[in-house]
Length: 441
Ligand SMILES: [Zn+2]
Image 1: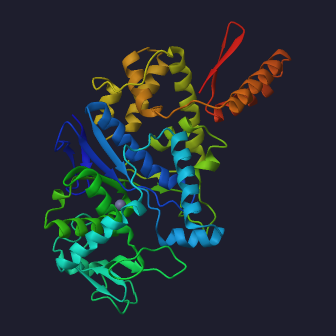
Image 2 (image 1 turned 90 degrees about the horizontal axis):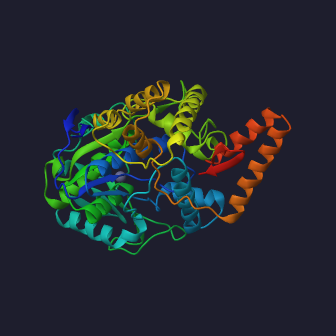
Image 3 (image 1 turned 180 degrees about the vertical axis):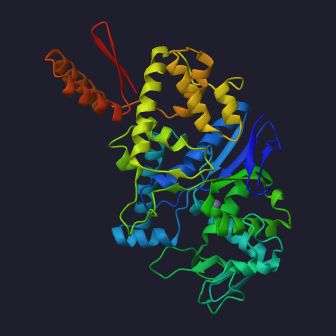
């Protein structure tokens, strides 16, 4: 029923799960050292979209996305913010969960933290050394890339070409410039664990091989991530997992490889040094989560999104029109109904722009179709997060509603609209019924 583009075969394929009673999907999660920006959010929303569609058609789906809580970037950020590693990763894990929740992303079923699997990572490395696929030198352990003959089969890069044109200093301890780190030594003031190779910490690529195998078993159905992870991250994961388990075929690790496209900020690249990083947190000051979600889903997941204010404003207007229409029928529960036109668009390699157009047509022609609406809600407004709120927030919302009613009674409609917008940014929708204002999140 579902067709999906497989980056490994480079074509759209009918999706056939290994076990229909438990579809297993792993997607690389965040390194928690900073607030999430719109480029990160695109990858998380693509994985969320796929997990929601899978959950719509299969009785059980296990969706795993890891948290990288040990990494050089984390160590550098903790120094910069002058707080401990633990405080930093706790802080940015919390903001990650909050931000993704606000744009309608449902947390994964399993969310393994890298530092909870250090013992297993050390065992994994030891096994690779015993198999002669890795070597230890000066407190480092490196994967011997030349020992895996299918290296590069996902990204299509051959080992010789990979560094072509790049002048790099080969670290003296490497047998080959392409060999990558499984374990590296930590200084005394850096986080680390005791290991057979001394005090140190795991390499990033290793984390995903270990956590995906432990949480899902191999082979599993789908492995996902951003396009930028294909090489070297996913190639290295493949090399490690296949080498450790005596496999030569990538599909004995994961059958389908799912990658989302980039997000373009015009001609400029989004970077901290250019000061043009778009954080979800900042966008949420101007747009509500539904509007941002719609903007991110307005382009099919594999295509580049041209990200700009016009796109956001257009998505805001579309989201508001659709919400207004949908809210006339509040009793409709979100549900993925495979026979609907919206579902059919999504089952065709997650064609979200087509699904949105179908919904827009229903709105324009005022055609009430409860099944299409249920399916739209499930995907586009489909957060299953707990939306209960504390009494302070309730009070704030009610105060704003009172202010708006006073403004309306005084004929100050500009102010009333401003307050409505403010409520909308708080994800509060309001409805005036028989002289009373009702609200809901
Ligand atoms: Zn990964």
